[in-house]
Image (cartoon, rainbow, N blue to C red; front, side, top):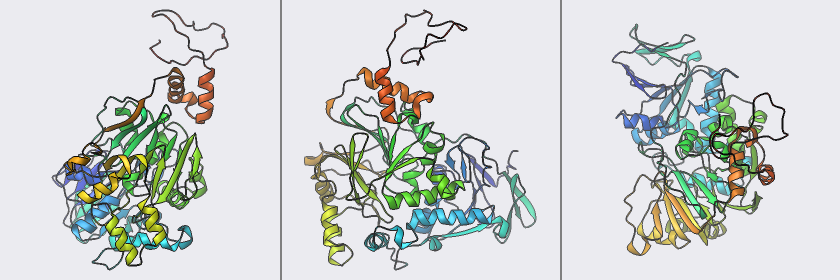
Length: 523
């Protein structure tokens, strides 16, 4: 079914539509980065968003609830921020059913305010810190979901916008203004979703520590990709830090397959840091292993449950979870992970592993932290812990961004942060023109999409690692645990065949071997 296209309907990529009505613009469908698609077209963020009906369970790979083929079409967090903080107004989210509305409220409560139950927090101190960071002067407190959003359903009359009525007839959303149909938008998601921007591939020479940035910008930059990077430690498989939207496509542009990833480190649950996670879990071709703190994991299970319309027990079966809680180092696949709770608006961890430190959206400013301590918002123990969160790491990746809940870059701040590591990489910012003092120029850099950071000796491209990566990419073996793949790779024999020679004829008896193409092409 094609939409009823008039001068009232603006069609964007990824099944995004903007309908101009007497009640204001209405957005239909909200896949990740919808705000960026709007900004790229010069369109202001609408105050009304209509979300699609749930995908029938089993209808297609990676589709259930709000998710189609691994893409969440109820990805509305940044539209909410743009309306509330930018336009000083609440946004109205319109679902088809009341059950969808309830699930969406659960999802947003977890991602915007953190766990609702006090026992889900590691302590009242962290909840107090988050509320302090999120403090919004016009309200005199941290904003809650109810301050920012009205969630209604068409099933309960939520389509009545005064002069405009929106209805769902089982296949289309119908827009009627003053009794006249002005638009009819198909509810089905028909296009394969693609991002606005991908990271350009750059030469990657593996060193002792190598970082490859899929993105290093923020959620409001239509030309950039949000913070997401791969870390290669020695000859090991890459670790993924946070999960930017459209991750499978963005990995492909770097010549990578999601099957090459075993571990994903999640710093926190803001949309720009987890939008690509459903893709990895549902369509990545293997069972993912997630590393984060227990409170963040429990919130994530509820978020995915609401997103996918799945019971929590079923969500927990989708991936393997490894707890990384502050004060309890985690040994996994030969790596030692350590964490510190960051200062942010929801539970967030800063992570250290193998000489890399990642701040995970921490608002870091030593003078501000001292002020929080002096005013009773931060204990002496926490102040000391935060001051040393990255002492001695080789490379510190620090999310910036400015504003109330992110670090604002200043000359003094860059000196303070660069003193903690040999190399400081600034991410989560669209500013590429940061004024870095001359004495710091060789130690401070800004992570643009595709940016590569390397430190230490060059790692030889040994045959064992190449075999391991071949088995990792092969769907037949990708689901094996990493240690089993490594053992299998060590037992493989490398056999070369001349160009044009015959490996085997169809119909011949088996020689007892299984063949995997390591290099070259066969037919």
